[in-house]
Length: 98
Length: 240
Image 1 (tube, rainbow over the protein chains, first blue to last red):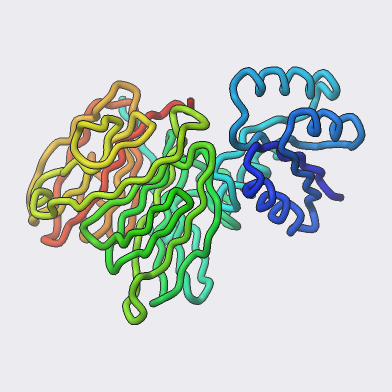
Image 2: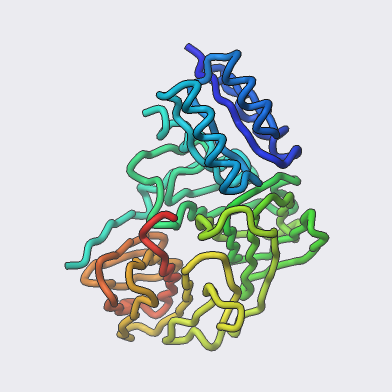
């Protein structure tokens, strides 16, 4: 069964890399966006299992985004992704899903 | 009462990609061990050996303090901030990835192996402006002394980062004993043995072993062999 992971980050280059990394594993389906509006729309139209918060999301936006996304799906797991690449990604996702 | 965790050299994660032979003290890339996720804010300690002329092409990072210490050979670094530099043994490089930076790292020499430690710390502030620095260290100053090579303060010895962390390197004569005082209450120390054999708080440690100690304000240290070389990483134990 595939785990659907939504990544939100402001940097387009990192978002492109994250899209490639998340979709490189058959057990994951990655959807990667740069804006909060896109993220909310994705959460309304897809069954998301995990949200990764990437770079450039300021504290106010993060608070609003977490409130909106958990309002749509209270059990949704939302974690911070650090490092912007493959180094920590697998461990972060495995820990969040375990 | 102090607490500790021991990571013996042969229990580290290992990935041999041919041109890159990597040992991971903590979970990294495809090495995942839930018992080895971090020591406080210390998240990555990679011991990489890279073949001549080989390396990592341009790739991005964000929100991480990345410290590179070459142990043998030299690294050719280029990044999206316009920095282009070579960092060799006896020097230290730091990059605050913050809102995002892209860089490449290659073995600067075609016919010489590069061995480096790459260390990632969680930052104490997210989305800072990316920055880069490197310094040449006075290697003689670490003889029988823990030489500070990194701190949170721009005007202190060594490079600085966005975290309440202090790194020290020392190279010791056999039989030399000292005490290291932890710089900030709540911090722990992760000792990584680069070479030789030492005893820290009664634990005998050998080359590439790691020992994390916390809930204490100091550690005792003794060098057991003439080539003992140690990196101490004094880091907050609480994640931000």
